[in-house]
Image (cartoon, rainbow, N blue to C red):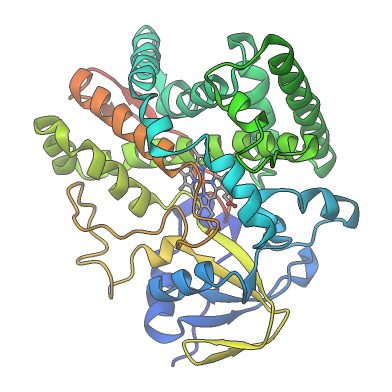
Length: 406
Ligand code: HEM
């Protein structure tokens, strides 16, 4: 292979251009399991970059070989004092501990439980665009894409309307963004986490006092058939995970999806003409945008991926954005096709234990949002350049000025 310049972590590149698809393409063709140098100055260790769909699926499914422990730190290591607490978080756990915990929270996110929210989500979408219509200038991110998942999460948690702004602010501080517009110091992020834990304690106490309701907090606090129940710390961390995982991802899928429509007007016209394509549109948006760009694992033993030797303790990073354009899996992978079928994208993870708990919810939110938009504002148009988030983790859009009318 010709020597090639590879830098999959340069935050400024992501801020300027989005995910580095040219590099992904060359890596898939020439070095699908590539040793990526770390950044000593920033304390980032080197890692194996895994870019093919089949390999991302393999790493995701073999939690015995690729541990999720300490993965939240992405590249840099967590301070020791946070490790024990973070270990209680689902994302950082391995089976069998993860399996028990995951089955407790699954109860709140089954397709049946989530399906019941459809009309409610439609009302939220309508309310948001009614409000946006009154504004002199509309920023699709601020006025539509960000509040939608926020309102839905608040509803799931039974949080009162007046708490929405506070939860939104926590979510932004917690993501620990490298973007100067959102940047929070580690201390601020930690303080936000503490506030979320106190808030979750209060939510749990209030629900216990007021008695059960038909909401997720009630489901999470109730012991399952074998008497297992989440501890208070685990409940607090789960609320924190929901606030982060449920907000940023769906926000960026919605705004990245809208931008993709502006860049591919024929696809938008197709959806306007046939809104029954909205469910497939939601999947294609998640494939195209891949709002979560990567996650990290650690090898638990000497092993191999595609013949490449991996040593115990090596960091392995899976790139969903690359896997979702893998030419061995998708016909015309660089074409945005809202009716793509089949669409075996892995934007919600490569399967296995950690597959996104919120995938039904996220798809429902996207489906309903794009149905409502296509019906109400077929002539929606972009009125200024989009700005991108400075992050190699979340493929995000910060602002997207639009006009709802011609
Ligand atoms: C895990 C993506 C929306 C909750 C994940 C993972 C990915 C992901 C890639 C990790 C999978 C793995 O490690 O194998 C996305 C995308 C979303 C989205 C692209 C939106 C388009 C949501 C929503 C919620 C949610 C709306 C909650 C309401 C979670 C949780 C986990 C998770 C709790 C951890 C599951 C575990 O460790 O067992 N998501 N997600 N996500 N997601 Fe999502």
